Length: 130
Image 1 (cartoon, helix red, strand yellow):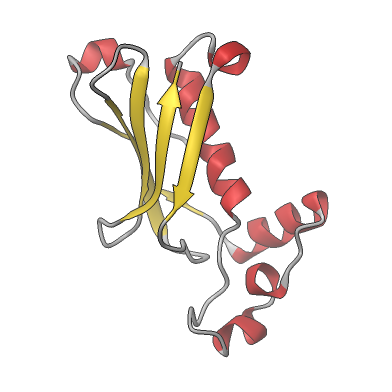
Image 2 (image 1 turned 135 degrees about the vertical axis):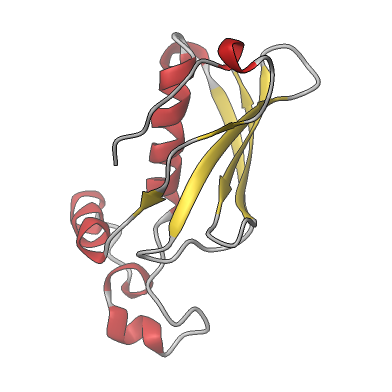
């Protein structure tokens, strides 16, 4: 999952889009083991086939960890004083491609961060203050 990044200052306040991410079932299973988040909707493809999603889902905490990684690349003090508020709108399924997008909001130090699914839909909406 190597992703090339540019600082927002280099983008002249334009929207930044990460490289493509894709979480495999193996990664989701390992994450579930480490975090004790081993719910069947995340780790059992046979179970997930019989749900409305038809596939296993990437855990929201895993998605936020990826967002944090992207924010760390932009903001030196993100880990010390960054705050975010996330709203989960749509699921990201295992093996689905997605991106993290960052853009300046109307207020200094506020950013709109999105996890965007393979259809170009916002799956996670995040308000971020750095």
